[in-house]
Amino acid sequence: MKEMTLQTKVKVCSYDELPSEDKEVVDAARAATANSYAIYSHFNVGAAVRLGNGDIVSGSNQENAAYPSGLCAERTTIFWANSQYPQEPVEVLAIAARNDSGELPVPIPPCGACRQVILETEKRYGNVIRIVLYGSKQCYVIEDGIKALLPLSFDAGFLE
Ligand code: THU
Image 1 (cartoon, protein in one colour):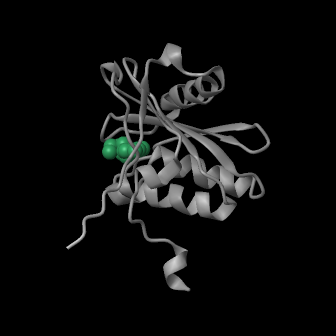
Image 2 (cartoon, protein in one colour):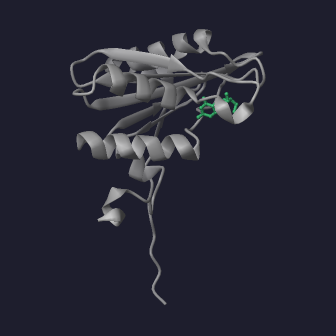
């Protein structure tokens, strides 16, 4: 039997070490945590995207008493961006989170469902999305796009 190794490259740095263009998107994600509606989990997530035209659009998680009816910050943001700017590719995605104690020191990665939506967004616009995960002590930068976070993924190619 042959073995297949799938590698994920993640750059680790502090917020201060991020390039200024990344900081702008991260700052929008951090600010968006303030608009999170997370009365059940008390886990406030913000996301922001930089679009092909340079605009930065942000969003946050929106919860619901019927828990699965809520939506993560990443999907809220991407769907809103795609519905308002259908021609503009999503080039950078930043994610940040806070809880009742403040900003999380470690980066929070997107959940599985959000990864699938990020994959679809890459396919839709034909570009790799730079993913920047913010933590107050440490940030992760994923330059290779969603394939780093969702290897062996299912996409429309299998439906052909
Ligand atoms: N959440 C996000 O918004 N993004 C993630 O990547 C992980 C989780 C939200 C969903 C829910 O409102 C809360 O965080 C707790 O899971």
